[in-house]
Image (cartoon, rainbow, N blue to C red; front, side, top):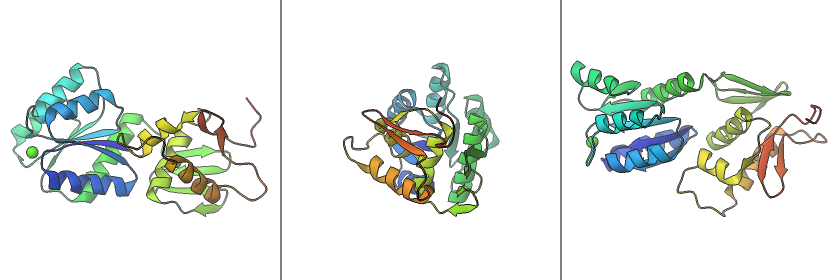
Length: 227
Ligand code: CA
């Protein structure tokens, strides 16, 4: 899950960012509406947490501009204002959901997951060969064996499995699973791929996650015929 947080209150932004990144996601943060709109138009996010009251451009204006630019990224608007008229304005501006501050972090995360599912029409269970990922419980199985994953490993595996058979560059992986300030040239992707292989692979059997020389990585069923 890659999330953009547009929020001018640093404490609130840090609170949301920490929650999302612990859950499995990469988080980018913008402190005003203009910067938020720029990021939202430039990168592909699974969802945007958009504060209503923002410097330079308020949340409603950001949302309208985003929709006018043809971007369908799900928007969860957050605001201390809980009048019906505020909610209606937010939804009319193109927001997909509206959450009133203060909120419980679990509710924020649940709503983000719901938005992501609605947006992707993503199946909750992914299966490649005998490797299975359950997005609702965030667990993986290799055959009957349960594979315990950290949040980041889960995010990486989910990304690879959703794009089974597609070669993904280190940059694509890093931007998806970490964030856009990720330091390119670092070997963190390779390190995490190795962790995942150690957990998924079985002794004496070929690996699911194959390195493509000079390109990146691809996940495919090693038992399936080459295609
Ligand atoms: Ca604000």
